[in-house]
Length: 533
Image (cartoon, rainbow, N blue to C red):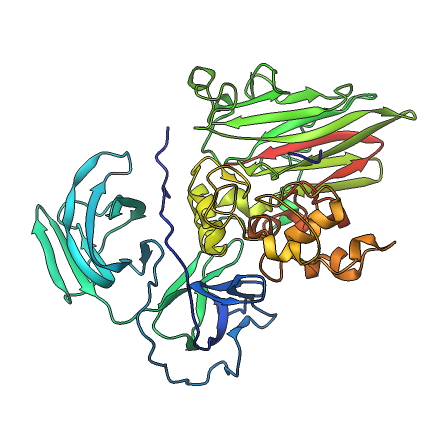
């Protein structure tokens, strides 16, 4: 319990380097929804600017308060006050190309760089090159108008000095400014060299679209209006109804005295039929199509995993066998059985290895009923938007995780190829923090055997001697203290923010201080598992 064919709309991005900013950061603002309601707990961060917090370069990252207000940096920044912008030198504001406000923004840190832009259909068919030339150092904006051929969505591949980014865009005509790069076959493209853009400001909240805006100064007021990116209406009572239209289909659960039955629910929103979803018991279990059986008797399955594969077909299993790397799958862990005459469930969903698909389980017992897993709205937003949220919310040390196995998984920070993992360019990310408390670890936070110490390093709540005390200090056990500063596992933080009651297995010892999705209870009558995409 403690360890753990569609073209992507968000394909591989490249990650550049951050730059530290000696100048004072003093930014503030308000985040609201489309109706003007203040939004609390929105993560607001600068994309690249960092500061030294004594343990290394830390991001400027905060959450909005109950009034939707945020402040980054030091000093006084009064919301609604008019604050003059400072004049700062241009920096490498965009670590990768961005699509903001109908324009593609990118930065060239070198004196000259080779830039190629190519357009593809969503099916991956090449349409044509838009530009292929050398550009001078600076920040650029590109507007593309394809009304002459189509108003559909496209994939735009931007390659800068051999490093590629692919974005899903719907081109539109925006202005007459800038140089016409190409004007043929119905495609118009305008390239503008921007004034000094020093960074980008990001705002993310589970269930809402992403807020991103370029900034030309690291002071002043910037407000955001976020709109919902999910079709969930917030009515949890509907999810708990007893009919096939409800999220939890409690009329069709299987119940039998002396047995623990699982019922698997397809909650992919019509993206995948039951015939395209398979489940298997254990590593060597044969795949069973959900349309053939949605019920599993786990009464005597002492300990193991239930694997669920979405969009899976056995003939497409290579490479990777039953759970290939080029398909979406996930699992839950459990130990079930009879103890002192009572049916007991011990289990959890887990993100220790990776995030694969949305999963939630509901356990119903005599006098007890609870749910663990991803929040409901995750089932009602697109997969691409979930991955995009990750890239925009986490600091640059973790953002590569959102692309390296997309669109199938967001792997944990310790995997090979991760920037904070073994051999990664930020592999020493947590070293100074852990070592200051006498803790030795290998990237990323491996080899820390004591649960308390491991959890404290992941959450940035370690205190001197805290784990050696009879009772760990409040700082180390109350979840409102977790993930408040770098270095910490922003991977785990992101997933906890999107978990029911904030409970999630984001790292091996996340069960310390009751942070994980683990549940154990007796007198079980039935269990449901909802799977999304």
